[in-house]
Length: 257
Image 1 (cartoon, rainbow, N blue to C red):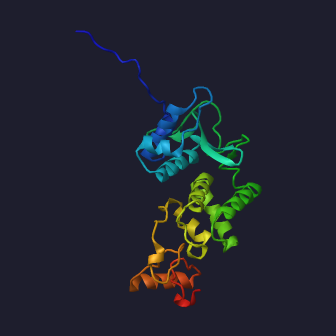
Image 2 (cartoon, helix red, strand yellow):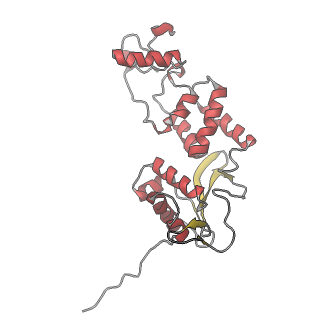
Image 3 (cartoon, rainbow, N blue to C red):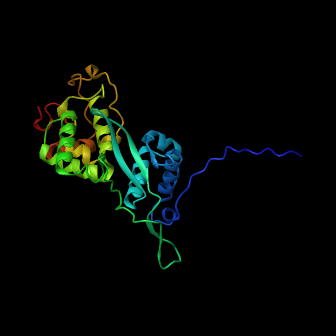
């Protein structure tokens, strides 16, 4: 009997300290996927978030959380690549050296050399640690504000922007606001939530606005979504109205123009 041997065996190397780290199973899986894409010498890879989500069989948002776990333990560095003024996919640099507690051992499992601080990159790329410095934050927020369709509450939006970038990364927020600004069914600005609300509620994951024949709805002009209906829904809309959010108010309702 003749055996057939398949020599096209592909595998990823995961350092033991990453396996024993206090991170989720998905984060470990993401590390292995990145290792398959990484260059053997530089340990750098730049697959898109969509590709990572497809390979890991999960949502893009789950990929973002898993990558952040790897950044927090110093297993991955993330940089934002640019081509002129436009953003490209992230650049990920794997770290084979690190420190993590191994079960059943008194000492940590360590590699050779001194591990860098979690998520820190000393290159010239815009990284998670440098993107929040005042100059970079101001530039990024100004770009966000220029794109956001409703110019109201800029000061409040600036604080929400920084929190969102800290938690989810600059590319997630900027990709989301670009999708919002380019939505062909975007309603009139007064019916779009304030930027701070949009950021705090992580609405970059919202579905696009639905296409509707608004001219067929009495009292509603084109470019404005129909307001929420039902007595309970109207109480919710009134609460939003009292908080300064009018994107669900009907024209003339609660004194709205």
